[in-house]
Image (cartoon, rainbow, N blue to C red; front, side, top):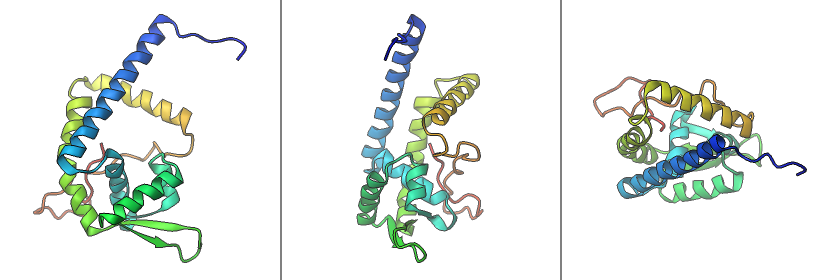
Length: 181
């Protein structure tokens, strides 16, 4: 590089605050997930994405793109989820190279059990310390970073997350997937 664009004091402070905040949030969420549900955050996210899909099924390549994961890393994770009985993998009838991942009833139950603690941890670590204006600014900044770093890989518009997990007595079909956090 011909000319290094060093960070000024304000940029350096922003970078370090961002780095510290993301590490602390991810550590807290990962610790809660491990202690309360025995699953890593990565697996939780995959289960959520499958729960939001029509028929609780996604093509593996689409699931990898939506989760911002490599195909090989996703394949390994899905293999572990299969071992737990939470996901079923099937081949594509029209494309022999293609495969689908489907969330099983056992996987949905595991997701519904993990969702309340996960969402509470996310709320306590990310949303409670921020004002609504700060939450909005965080979302805008995060969307800008995703757009710049992964253009076309993750649909930000329309990706509103899922609705809250339904209690057993609720029957509304639009309330079937735990809230993504």
